[in-house]
Length: 511
Image (cartoon, one colour):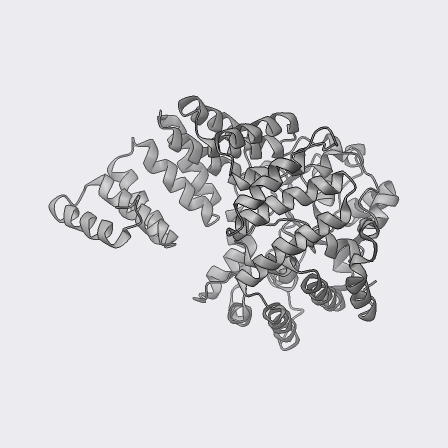
């Protein structure tokens, strides 16, 4: 019943069994799986945790407990459950694959690779296992192996659309070595599948760009992105209201500058528009011996949401912003730090480089008055174009603006206004870094960044490309290379196709 999505009937059957056998571990586990499928994660965790207490020798129970815990940022608990599942050991391929996904979420990609390979050894015909393996290989910089794993996934399942778009980001495309014919054939076959079109067209655009065919690449992106925007029914007005509520919240906040949160300096926040150089700065700072990167964490927003007790589905919305004025910010800081363990315990400082934390700067300063916050800025044309041509997480609504160039331009304007507002409030407590300055004068800017973070100079920060820490962002390929100017003025390659974007940004004094 669960496998067929008949959750109501499955739930009733489990309850009937529990009347006969209240301590039936598998029944509690299945009720947890039903709750997880319905998005009731807190309930799911409670039920599966009960199953582990009734039978503490079942790897599947601990495995799915870890999966649910990691999905709601309960990292330390997820790590414990994952460790227990691995100790018990399992010959089940899905259990090992799921544990690999949990390890990946927790930032341990080496362990994830071991687990994915174990799953493959049991079920070598499963395309998704190879796809997951490839992702962790890519994050660790093993691009050759990742490419081979993506190709294996495609050989097992030709219409594995996510594998095609991921592969295109890795490949060294040439006239002799490309997949354009394969992708065009797939594009024709999946015309009625918006998400499939999205992945295939982004792969096509990437390969055409590598061959210097910028106009066909842009037109392909415009076609698939427009279809996705229509499906989502997105309007920039939604984000306009969010940004306006943020500003009005802080403008009407009594004793705003009375910062009474945690005294911890442990977290370093790197924020900015996506594709503005946040990953580059993350790699630079995390090359320092006293710093570890925790990646793009959603933890701060999730913990703030929990404390507001708002019932809306969005992590950040107008209701949550207004309710946040009443929370205990010292408690928020403690819960945030706790949620980042065990990864954040490995070093004196850790980096949270979720770009969209720029929305939370005011709240971060209330929770961590002494925290370092670095704001990345990049040329408006390059930022907007890069957002438009990047395929972000399809189901993450905060990137919905990126399916339309002009929506992206308007969103960039909202971002710029909000950054100006935060700077007017917190002044020198924030550090603004311009991507182009960093690329053109790396040592000067890196010294400036380290001074702001109160970190000593270390030459390793200049040689960030040698940093072996995992990178699980859209820039995972680029930041493995030495500093270069390849991405500066990329927009000029598209001729007059970006005139409307340029005219709008110019009219708003954003260029």
